[in-house]
Image (spheres, rainbow, N blue to C red):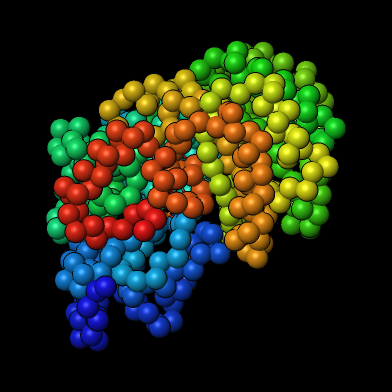
Length: 457
Ligand SMILES: Cc1cc2nc3c(=O)[nH]c(=O)nc-3n(C[C@H](O)[C@H](O)[C@H](O)COP(=O)(O)OP(=O)(O)OC[C@H]3O[C@@H](n4cnc5c(N)ncnc54)[C@H](O)[C@@H]3O)c2cc1C
């Protein structure tokens, strides 16, 4: 419990910060602290909307003096519990991105979203190893590892980080690279929170301007054939193919495009790094598996990569639960569809399975804290956006589906795919046991008083 904050102390903090400082009760605090998941409402003692590293330093020093916990938020895509005390540093004003084309390095501000990085890099014929949604924050995503639409070819995004500038718990600005503070560099690539506040990161880009990619949509009657074909096909595709499938239940509302409204469909997402003719050849068995009512796959510039998954970019109430899967087979499809297939009463708008492995597995062998590299599939269930179902119906329904597919669920997972965290044990499962204990040691070394709160308490 921190000591109370006086008006004079707040005035002093305001004088030392070039961004905004809002205290509980100030109008504008709720908006400044708002998350992408609107079911989570933060109400900290103080919010510092940082513009500079100095603002972050001032916020951390202020929090230490008052023995208040410190939180950080860029977009709120990763918010999983309401913040009820302490100092929240928001980074959205620090959204600068610069690209050094000769070195193929992007320097990405703490508040930048992937869309800005993709767009700046493309101007120089380059691309970052981005996530499925260009709306997600690049730094928060990468701190968790980062598995996107090119994951099998290029691995975790964290593998491509060459350095971080970090504000530490003792109020210093340090560099973390392979040579400077390598322990912190190791932990920040996959360990995610509780280590420091990242001011910016240097990310290596790759020379890539186009992929052959997009999505196929299969209607209800063809879901089973397409899903069984996908599970077989993924075992044969090369590392240059990354794909996923999602069982999508589109609500019958006007906001949904007419050709999808009210439908239960399977969405295959596909990205191939190589020329279109070869991509078309590799994809052919999936096009032949069942008729698709929408075929949106073709040659696309990397600036369109966000359209492959076409994740929603509107904030709203959200509940999701994620895990990873060991190898899946035809019996897995039978088990999944028997609980979540056509005709079942399922309160999930999406059940997504991503095929990783290949590059992501190689990543796991690199010297970083990323979790989940060894399990070849991720599975995430995204609930209907009705907060009144979040406490009981969605957890119970997800338990029901999970109990049907238990034999395929891997022990390990990745923090970016964990979703709703129900227990400390579940949180710990986001890293291999040795990485989790090394992370705890690194957190203790860099933040002995644990002011950077992270994970369930
Ligand atoms: C629609 C959607 C699509 C997604 N797609 C993918 C995907 O393809 N692959 C994937 O791996 N993940 C994916 N995710 C998960 C996403 O990567 C995480 O939720 C990530 O944490 C979001 O980062 P953010 O900065 O946008 O969110 P925020 O909620 O702002 O931040 C989340 C956490 O990141 C940490 N953090 C953020 N900024 C800093 C900083 N400057 N310094 C220190 N810590 C910081 C903090 O611990 C913070 O609590 C997706 C999530 C959503 C909602």
